[in-house]
Length: 129
Image (cartoon, rainbow, N blue to C red; front, side, top):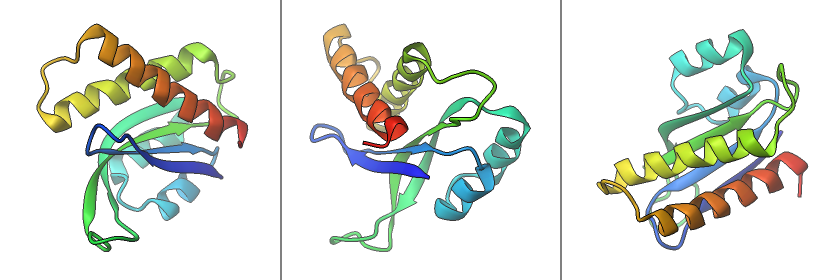
């Protein structure tokens, strides 16, 4: 299982990117992913982005739940993971961050930079770098 928990310096939301084909393994590692999502993904998932929370493992918030956006990729899904599917999921991350911080819409340039950064992070996790 490849994964990274990242946080932009600009926005108070963590992004957890996971590349793994076993949904139950993902759920054991990240138990705060809602059960209904796990059930839905068991059917046949390629990629999925969801709102959620994650338990802080260090720092002053250790043990507390923090806002998180999960981006889940299945490297053995029904189609290969493409640049397009990564960009698609990165767009959803931007939407969820906007919701979390109460922003109607980022400017197009701010959204483009955030999509770029999230997509790069996703690519790193998928490729195992």
